[in-house]
Length: 87
Image (tube, rainbow, N blue to C red; front, side, top):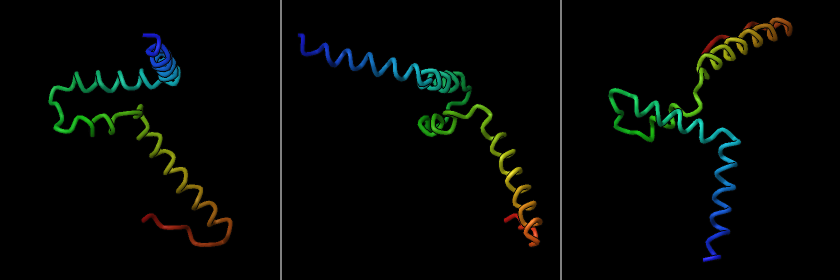
């Protein structure tokens, strides 16, 4: 029976690591969200992939893309070139 203790301690250590890193909380939030979804998606794994780690990240991404476009235009202007067009 003593051969099982190292496995248990490794599991416990890994569980604490996941908790410290916020993984357990993130997974719990996504799974609760899926549970509360009135119309369950056909592909639950895709739902988890799509919603894992998206806490307003789409808005931040759009702001970052807009800022990049502004900086590219400013950079082109400073270099005396035509501003790049969106593509």
